[in-house]
Image 1 (spheres, rainbow, N blue to C red):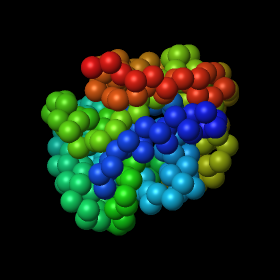
Image 2 (cartoon, rainbow, N blue to C red):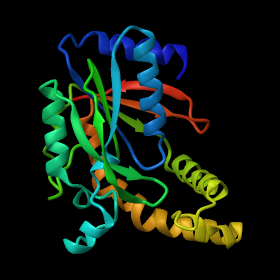
Image 3 (tube, helix red, strand yellow):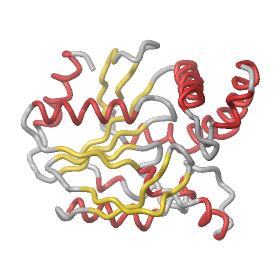
Length: 238
């Protein structure tokens, strides 16, 4: 996040006087939501704000629950989330209460058998692909957010970043329980082909059907170039 962008974002946040507040960060898969949320968190701390980050990944149903509930929508689509728990978390934050939440593992792609405590702060950053929807595919959580940043770039950029992330996970995994372990024996061409099928059939479909339409519900669109540098921050016309 460059200095100009930092100044713009700080000026936007300074205009919100109430506490605690919830800032939403959303956008398609591999756009860099976690990175942006982390940089925003650091920026806020450097400027005297207390801040914390909550990922919507922690509110995904476990694989066991997806099976028992006969949910066929892919993970990351609205129906794959426990939206009641997510709503309770947002309500607690609004009421200045800490949140007990499940833990999602990016190693096994499943919910772990443990619970973490989210400590509510003055500024609470909620990041994820679907921050607005309940699990009936309805937009219902927009009123919880005091400010929402929608991250955007050319789709070709996010596909390239996604493929790069896949290769990173494959290189880093050494455990047979890791989701990416079977990919270790595949050629680069096969990895790209399988990744593209997943991207087109799931990630891009989720973007077109659910994520992109929420741009109009956001307050600002943060545009990135192919080097993942912020090139503009645009206020959404409503």
